[in-house]
Amino acid sequence: MKTTPLVAGLLVTLAVSSCATGGAPAQPAPKLARSAPAQLTGEISIWSWDVAAKALQRLAPEFEKAHPGVRVKVVDIGYDNAYDKITVGLKSGSGLPDVITLEDTAIPGYAENFPGGLVDLTGVAAKYKAGFDPAKWAAAAGSGALVALPWDSAPVGLYYRRDYFERAGVRPESVATWDDLVKAGEKIKQATGKRLFVSDLTTAAGFTTLLQQLGQGYFKGGKVAVNTPAAVRALTLLKTLKDKDLLQNEKGWDGRVTATKQGKAATQPTAAWWSGTLTGEMAELSGKFGVIPLPAFDAGGGRTSANGGSALAITAQTRNQDAAWAFVEWLLASEERQVSMMRTEALFPAYLPALADPFFDEAQPYFGGQRVNRLFADQVKQIPPVELTGDDTQAQEFLKKAISATLLNDEDPKAALDEAAGQIAAATKRQVVS
Picture (cartoon, rainbow, N blue to C red):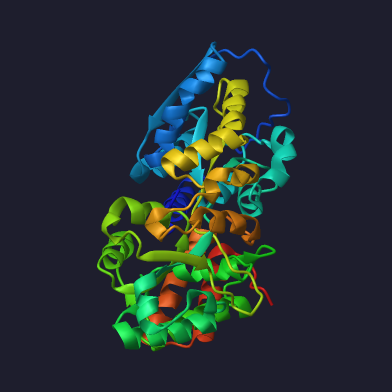
């Protein structure tokens, strides 16, 4: 599931920051320590949105058929108000369904600020750890307890325009590092007049993706880490691209889609879900795109990252814990269901056994017959797990200013990130990594 450039994390962390205090006293997280019994009864309700809700609505009847005593009610609560509703329910201790959908960026804030609000699934789900995308598992278990089971993954690759590369005489396989791509971008711009990729220079999304590629988040060992050598390297790369006039600055999601549709950029470093956007909204561009792994920072280095993804969590307010877990396990720890959701709703599996399915080896006509899903499937295990915290979105607000200052006002990357690190440390009461 795509994440509108970290909006979800922003909504939840700001809401949690303002609401976590003043509610009921913190309670220990309820633990689910036994597998669901064979005979299940009662009703469970699930909140979700967009294609995730459609997948749940489509598959729920199959679960009900396997468990005739259970009814599953799926409610599409819409994305715009989802986190407001979840936050209010956690704070008040009432009003939540049995199961909720959470994006990865939302999980740490809820786990830290409402420690009794989500069921600890460690006792029943730990056996599946090796079967899931390691980065996704780390996001769901960052608080020490596994409070959600990973759903869809979002490995990042480099989408490119075949026709622009050909006109510039650039072979896609020659692009192995970011240095290679910068040089290729200069050739492409000279030959076609097109910039390298579309980016909103007022957000932290591109920086965050590059930082995760280098194996780091905003915090490291609980300390502020936005001015580490890795962070400076990520922002310096973006500044290099901007200085060479290779970034097409467009505002938000709509700007990115429109600019791509109009052919303003030669590449787009983004997640597997972008394939659905291309095929769904730009059918007329069929055959013009290909995908290669994300360029490495150093030759032989990691060539992927993550951008998006979600999980299912069981709320402490559930009155049917057994049926709730049985459904979550049935849906997500299943090759059959995960492949089904990939085929029908384009939800890229976080469950690794599903990635061996022949579906991922099918040629895709839109991409010139390339097996794009296999490329992404092979990258999932390589996504670097990073430390996520409830302070990530607060940190992101300071980083947005540092990134804008660097890319739009020509400030030195190290100086801008040093200033952001100090501001984040003061706001979160955390130390800065030395």
